Length: 333
Image: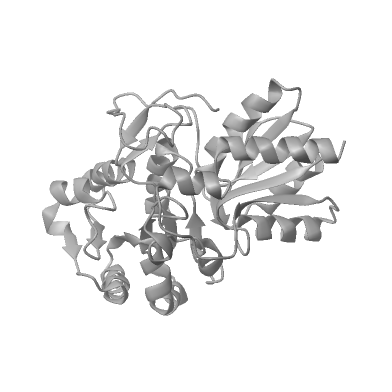
């Protein structure tokens, strides 16, 4: 499951995110390309942005369907309100902005204008967690915690280019409001062409008995690489990828946790309110009494800086995951 094979016919490009992808092949703007393909057979799909089209990878759709693309300007509440109005006319709007703006600035509009009426609007949110160095004003480190509180809102945190393309297709077919985190630009390919994404379903990518890593978003790439490295040191690490935060696949998480000696969560998000909190709730409900080690961001605003430097400082690297697990195994042996 963790191979770097690509879908036939896709254009591959090594780019600025190569370091984050561990030298893997990458796909340029997988979301925009997937949406442009969908637009060919789905005339009801329209694209919107809040003056961030270039930076949310929706330009391939704009270029293919200029009459179905709307830039509302730097007004995120209007972005959601316009998308809601279009949905009421039978359109399926894909609205893009940064995660911090979709959540902090437009939260009430998402809750009431969209979710309360179960409107068919898809919010695609760039710069999740530590994928930008522009500090607390631009780093959406708490978006999953905020959005999972909205009733009826589906929440997706994809791992790689393959899953972004598959998730874009899936949420277009799904009826109802969606919030999807966006990895933009040149996005690494972690999953091969045989990978299947399904809303609400976790995927066990690797078996293991010593420790089970439950991960979401790009941290699944780190988890897989860490598991490979740990196996060479005699540590058996399983990996469960949870791309859908809501609805949460509690059954798969409980079954996976029950089969390993130690549990670690890994997320590109604060450790409060996101994946780790969901896993703790799941274990409690299932009566599974095991200690959980959380890998993620601290409950604080993150400073400005180079992305690789920040990810290393706050433990969102493969090396950090390896170090945490080795220490955990040694102290609990």
